[in-house]
Amino acid sequence: MTRGDWWRHGVVYHIYPRSFADSNGDGVGDLAGITSRLDYLNDGTPASLGVDAVWLSPFYPSPMDDFGYDVADYTGVDPLFGTLADFDRLVAGAHARGIRVIVDLVPNHTSDRHPWFLESRASRDSPKRDWYVWADSRPGGAPPNNWMSAFPRAGPAWSFDHRTGQWYLHSFLPQQADLNWWNPEVRRAMDEVVRFWLDRGVDGFRIDVAHRMARDPELRDNPVVAVGDPDDPTGQARAIRLAGTGVKLFDEDWPEVHEILRGFRRTLDAYHDRMAVGEVYLLDLRKLARYYGSGQDELHLAHNFVFLHQPWKPEAFRSVVDEYAALLPPDAWPAHFLGNHDHSRVASRYDEGGNGPARARVAAMMLLSLWGTPFLYYGEEIGMLDGQVPGDRVVDVDGRDPERTPMQWDASPGAGFSSAAPWLPVGAGAERVNVAAERDDPTSMLSLYRRLIWYRKGSAALRWGGYRSLPDAPASLYAFVREAPGERLLVALNFGGEPVRWALDPGLGDSSRLELSTDPARRPGPLRPAELVVGPDEGVILQLGQPLG
Ligand code: NOJ
Image (cartoon, rainbow, N blue to C red; front, top):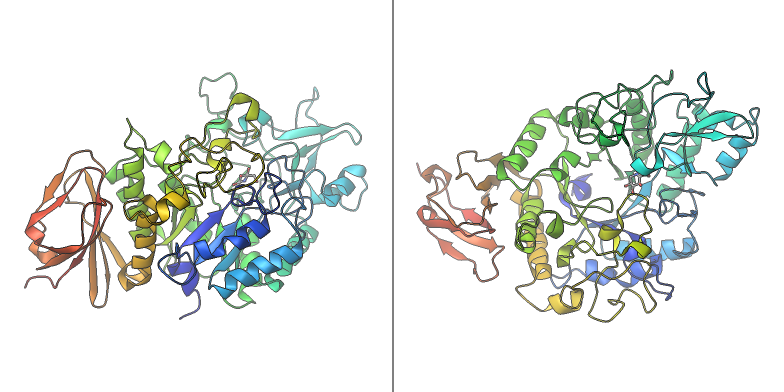
């Protein structure tokens, strides 16, 4: 295998440690719980899911104001999740099974309880004062500028510190103070953090808000875009939907962020075969592509949020994938995903009148047959839905509890996740949608995921082959060809609720074989190319013979 093979060609499984498996009966998932489930993830046989890597959301000591994305110690493990020894056991157990381990790096901000921030806020003369972003009031006592927190409920991105009479910046909660990356000491300190985990054997990092860190040193106001919402007077809370309007001109995607990422890359490249995938939350493919640098000197992968935000329309996904392919630098590789701990689950998000589960099967096939590295959020492989979280159980500041409910292992009251009351309620339907119920059911979502992942593993065309979309396919299909020497696959995904008959162009192949369908009733076998029918909400993978002529 060549260097970089695993992160280009493998499947990455994203674990939210609080919600995966609770080993000590306190209602919160932990590292030992994850270790106990490694065989489920990959035991080397198609009876297991077969993923090649796991990405762990933060497990570091934290006051948990943002459930771990508020780090109070970058090189420890929060007692809630276990110990460093538990982490070492997890890495050893994963590596023994050929599973790589990616940890979350949160370099943009620390907890306001991190010793660095405590020292910084102690006085204006503190040696660490400049490690964070401090600024004076504007005349009249207003915050230094109009930047807003990414969490609408948190309001302005500035909080006033009475003791020292200045404001500090926080792109998220007031409990998440932004580090000042213009300060070389901050860069050195974070580099040590990166080396700490690399030396401990991690295979890579997921970099939280990798498009932040650098910002306008003059702290100028963002342009105001009126959206007619009194709670969002500058439009910044809607920035996601206002992509391209420049509303976040000065507080993210600032040019120097690329130099910071090159610094991370230099450190990673000094180790063998490690990687960084960035959470680059920019809904602009051109900007996103720049985070790969030359293709060799910034991020190895950048999560494509434009893909995740598409409506359930074949041309929407096709145009994102095709446009992006044209924008990426040579040798760069996309990272596709459809869910994470910040977004509604696929079977819920795309549901229209009950077809969510069927669409989720098509989405699974799309994710696992496309060009690029697929990232799969825990629970998607069994078709989990968004949980129903009653008002008195809501714990997240930004409405993300439904996608963080406990992994459903079995039909017991705690879903096999915990022997105690779980920190978030178990999702409705867990008595049907769970690993135990699906494991031996060939029609289940879990069986489909396993088939797709193991098929992908054995297919050069899917793992690293070329990609070419077929825009002339019938309108409700997203169809593409994946090809490697000696192997040519056609993937046809029906986004509509009606069957589609499609007489394949003879140029595509003179024979074909149905390899996989999302319809559990449809069996693999020979299929005449002139007679392809793709059922409602069905996806198929066909092996094509040599083209005619
Ligand atoms: C992105 C993370 O995915 C999200 O969960 C978190 O709240 C913010 N970054 C802040 O760290």
